[in-house]
Length: 411
Image 1 (cartoon, helix red, strand yellow):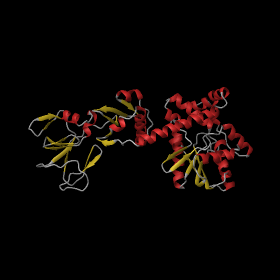
Image 2: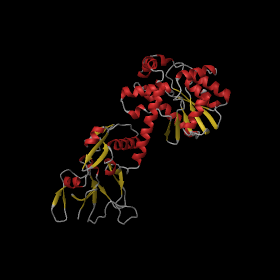
Image 3: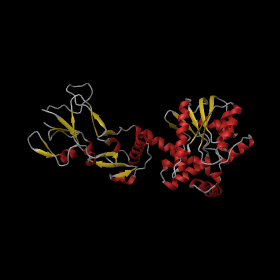
Image 4: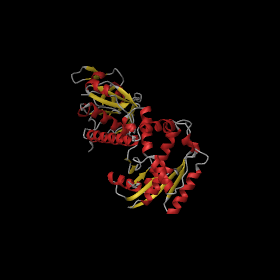
């Protein structure tokens, strides 16, 4: 199949019509220049623009912009350029920081020009490198499958149309089309694990099996199908409930099959905290606690709770006045003299003034029969874990607690 037909087939198979506005991320190297030129030649009712970030990581990085400006000027393609200031270059984690800044610029540009799709030139060799690199670093399948053909970043579709193409195909196309491009000299240096894989390991794998890039694509497709299935099924389960600075997981979710519950939790964490985590199947199956990426998962009184492992200290008491909002542990409350249309936590009748804060440990609470009960018993009966009890709003009349959120109201 002709390389242009192969590219057109990608858009047809992914259900992406060749219309609207496309922004191509171009580094000035052979892969992205080939993608830009292929898109320019592709028939369709779409506008085309290019975006380039000079990372300033090499003395000759300016040359990439020169080549790209000449190409875009020749074919009247709008070009959006920026630089990554050297003052923002970190001493460690340079590759990750460069990627984060680059995508920030690309997505901001895509939103600015209202592009429907942002296209990057990741190809089959990149896909194989990514699978191997993530296998070495974490072995988490979701991370190994992070280079997907189509994904979404907010309102922008992120499209990688060259994953079924080899580096050799793109170099051959660039040569045949007479494209000018700049080779990144650092790609030939064994300074990163990615470069070492590219130069030493992948050639050996290709010699062992020339079809290994197709296998990498097949792995990605199978993983994407499995992730999509679990994501759709998990989305049908009830959502976690925000309570006391944490999240209480509905039993309908926690009682699902372990693999589905695992996907449910991981998808929620990624959506809510923008963190990729992998919970232990063994610990989930046995109901044991576990901590991932600063989040603690705990089974307490037949409910799973998910909350930040680092919790704020207990809040000191503060005087509160009627009809004036006050803050407690990052949440805003209002004590009103009149009933309001919106839902309320409690209706209280009391003499004098109130104060608000965290309930001191060991405090006893008066019951309707005149006896007093330890607060920990009431917290336990309400299923509130120990670590979250300081986040439960407590109201005091003098030293007497008249209300404790979630578990107590003075008779």
